[in-house]
Image (cartoon, rainbow, N blue to C red; front, side, top):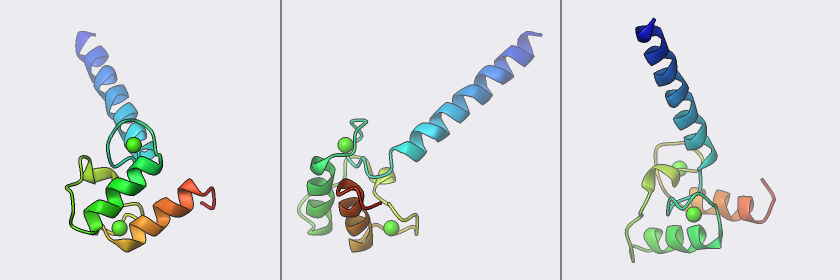
Length: 82
Ligand SMILES: [Ca+2]
Ligand SMILES: [Ca+2]
């Protein structure tokens, strides 16, 4: 019985983390919100001025590359167009 409870708890945790990850696309500073600050940070990263604090959230279009297309997608998201 204890084994099943542990497995269910782990499955729940995996689901929560997966859902949280999905909802954090664009949150490149990992503060839990997608704001203009994320846009500035991503812009500075693409201009090679700074590192990305949270690169896993920067690939907005999920193509495996962090580039101008992700910046555009983040801009559109913040503008409410996506
Ligand atoms: Ca953020
Ligand atoms: Ca991308």
